[in-house]
Amino acid sequence: MRISDLLNDADLNIRLRVAGEEVKRERPISWCAPSEHMDPTPFLSVNALVLTNGMGLNVRDFRIWDAYVERLSSVPVAGLVFGLGAAHSELPAGLIRACEAHGLPLLELPPQVPFVLVMRHVEQIIAAERYEELRKGWDLADECTRLAAGGHSLAEVLQRVSRVIGARVAVVDHSGFELVASGGAPEGTARTTLRLPSGDPHRFKLIIEGVRSNVVLQPLLGPVAAVIAMQLSYTLGSRSPLHSREAARFIEALYEEERGTPAATLRRYASETGFDPDAEWGVVLIGVSDHGAPARLRALAWRARVGLQNGFSTVRFMEEAGLTTILVQHPHGSLELGPAVQEFLEDAPELSAAVSECGSLMELPLALQLTRRHIGRPGVQRAPLADLASVVRGLPSQGLVAMSKRLLAPLGSEGGGALRETLAAYLRYSGSSRDICAELFIHRNTLTYRLRKIEELLQLDLSDGEVRAVCLLALNIVGAAR
Image 1 (cartoon, rainbow, N blue to C red):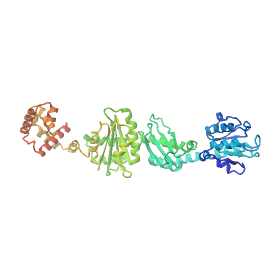
Image 2 (spheres, helix red, strand yellow):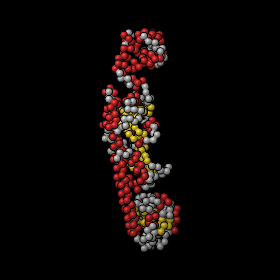
Image 3 (cartoon, one colour):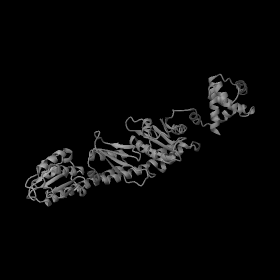
Image 4 (cartoon, rainbow, N blue to C red):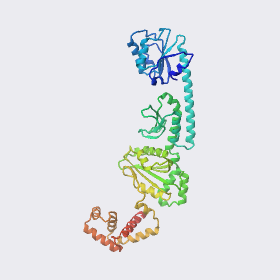
């Protein structure tokens, strides 16, 4: 209900004497407020339509009219309807001048039209509009409920809401970080915030940009806000497909290599969890760094999961104490996993996150372990495609373990563990005498003696690159088999 709706009614015969500012003419009228007070502002609310006969304003001083209109504009009201006949046969010149000065719409009501007719007309239109808004709101909520129940993501639900209201809609978390958004709005447009109903301490909000009136948004978005809150809670909750018993079983099987889960079983677990066993995989681990705050981990991991769900068709996760493991598949478009996670956690430098990708299900256990070894340093790290520990873990042959132990056995017969420690340091530091001696707290001459003794016992030449590689693998294989 706006000023233009009053002007279009032939029965009221209302004339617009001062158009006022366009933004004020477009304000929705919330109710009618008849008043003959010199200062009615204590009895008014925003967007009221003031009706007066001017009985208390039978004055000629422009300053009184100006002060009166200024008070109305400060509320602000939607407009002023001035009824002729009872106290004034025509509109006071001072009132017209004051309304022009303050940009307040001024309407002239003829003597034969009573205020009650105007009030009834306004109330009927407002009631019809509110009914229509409520109907649209519940229709939108029903449609969004069907989308959510059909497995559509939160981003797809917001796209539908954005199209219906013609504005940009976004969900933000308790810290103001934008989890997901849809639609567009010109820069500098009106911004309205609606709190999403939730019992969680980390509350979420719905931000709407591009719709001026909160009066319109409340009945339209009230029902759908509950749907969005439920879908958000479901997405983050323990009963979501993202966080399901099947997802936990699958990820635990990937981590627990010692169980030797058969490849066929892993494929079945992956399918039951909603993954494509033959597709490529993305891995994200989010944990607490040495100086991090464990209390923030869960809330920020939630944020990352919601964001990743909008970027990937399949997202599953498992939570442990101090660590969240997330697996993803099928990115939408050319989304890159690393930059996406970096954006989600840019305001949490105290957390540690590691990202990796692999091309097959058989690589996935090794990729998970490799990525996990990079958790601890603050910030987002990209794990390498492979490291020595991954190669060693991929060599499960018991014969190879026995062979490696037999190769290194002579080092235990003399000198205890000192010779093995010296060999490991020699290989780790690529023969750098300064670094080896600093770590082992020995003299260069001692290092030279030990290396000569190692070569004698193993009957190998450590200057040979292939020999060094074999010794390095043997040390790691024996260490992994303990």
